[in-house]
Image 1 (spheres, rainbow, N blue to C red):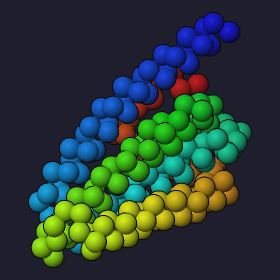
Image 2: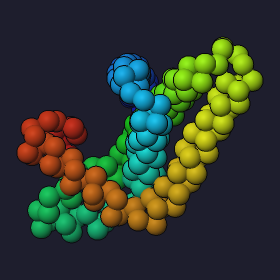
Image 3: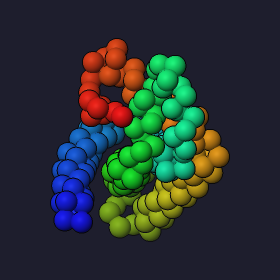
Amino acid sequence: MKSQIKRSIKFSLTIAVITFVLAAIFSVVSSSILSEVAWFTGIFIVLIIILIGVIFDMFGIAATAADERPFHAMAAEKVPGSKEAVYLVRNADRFASFCNDVIGDISGIVSGTASAIVVLQIASLLNQTDGSPSQLALSTLLTSLVAAVTVGGKALGKTVAINGSTQIIFIVGKIIFFIEDKLKIKVLPKNKR
């Protein structure tokens, strides 16, 4: 019990540090990109950020819904990505936490910040002063739109993830295999079994 609590605390602290670093990187990159582009490109970037959150949320749900048995047969035949898929399903709680809580939540926060930058860009084009009724309406509209697209996208993603969990996790396993094998970037612990 104590070792499990220690492991959980260690994992939580690691996730917190990773979240802090990734949130800072996402925020700086998106803010610097958005300050250099037109407002309509900014809206497109906000949609890409939302899409990243939806996709990773789908990955996390798929890992918790997938069954590892189909991947064992593939692993026996040395199918690329199958060992990685087994690892993801066996560690679904951690993988889902990373995908849903770290990447998903960061995407939500950054998309909100990015949409605020877009609102300011549009307001400056319209020569609106801070706090004007039209700027407030624009801010409310864009914030509501971002929330609706995020929630709607995640709801659709959950349905897809639950119904296609095996295929989704196999795709993620193949992506991880490619990154580790071809790009030589370590993603998963050495012992994936």
